[in-house]
Amino acid sequence: MVVDEILSFAAPLDENGQLRQAKEHSLNKMGHAMHDLDPVFDEFSRTRKLAAAANCLGLEDPAIIQSMYIFKPPRIGGEVVCHQDSTYIYTEPESCIGFWFALEDATTENGCMYFIPGTHKQPLKQRNYRKCHYPAENWLQRSDDLPLRGFDS
Image 1 (cartoon, rainbow, N blue to C red):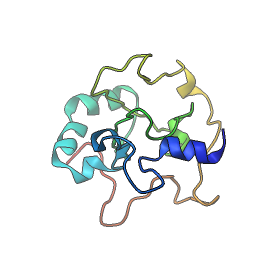
Image 2 (cartoon, rainbow, N blue to C red):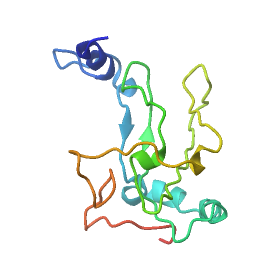
Image 3 (cartoon, rainbow, N blue to C red):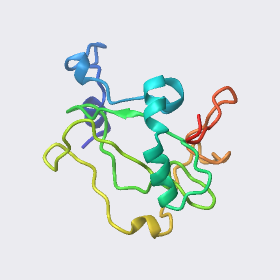
Image 4 (cartoon, helix red, strand yellow):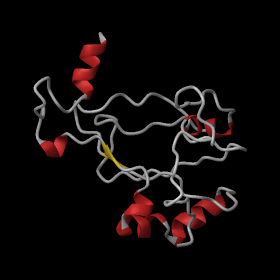
């Protein structure tokens, strides 16, 4: 497959700048810090149940790094290849754990998420860098006016 074919598949706009499909089916994802930008998302992200889950997983002083809606409509966005979350959100020591919540039924037919049991205990296989050097240390950066916060409001 040539690059132009990949881009035409992944891009919501055609060569004339028009939407390829209805706008409600043209958005791939929204936000990277919804827990700090949207009050409803903030309330959901900091529930006692999620804090208890993080505690049960052995996390000490966890921070909520990233939150977003991923819509995954047909013909928009690219394939998400098999990866470890620490590929994109690296910590030392490695401690990145992702919580995913499906808002619609997710099946093998419509592209549900897969995981390989036990791989969270394996060493990181690859890191994603921004312009080859990206430490301050993660793929996702936050500005000083939007600092990281944990489960405590």
